[in-house]
Figure 1: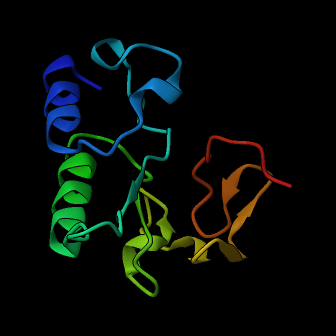
Figure 2: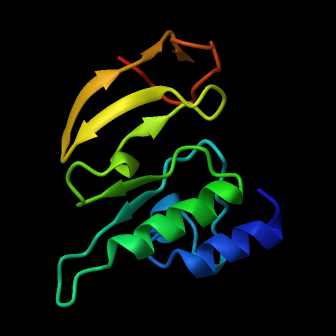
Figure 3: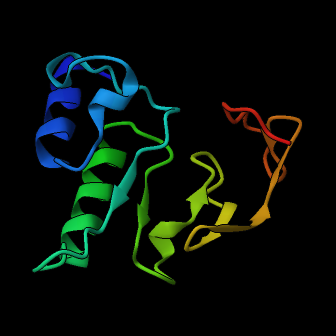
Length: 119
C-alpha cells in the first residue's frame, strides 16, 4: 500500500489494532492481504454502523482486500469476498464461520490466490 494511502487508512480507521501487527502504531505497515477487522464497540454510545461502513469503504479503496466488520450480526460486511471476482469467500455469523470457498489457497470461483493458512 502506498504511504499516503496507508496514512489515510490509519487516520480514518482508528479501530485498527496496529500494535498487533508487531510495530508501533505510527510505523505499522498495512498489506493488502492482511484482513483488518473493524469492530463495533458496544460501549455507550455504540459505534455507528455507518462509521464502520465508511471506514471499510475507505480501507478497501486504499487497497486493502479483505476488510470485514464485526459485532454487527447479519451485516454483509461481516463476510469476506474475493477481490477479483467479488464472490463470497468466507461466510461469518458472529464468531462462527460457515461457508469457506477457498481451496488449495485459491478462490474456488476464479482461482485468485488467497494469502493465509487454510485447513
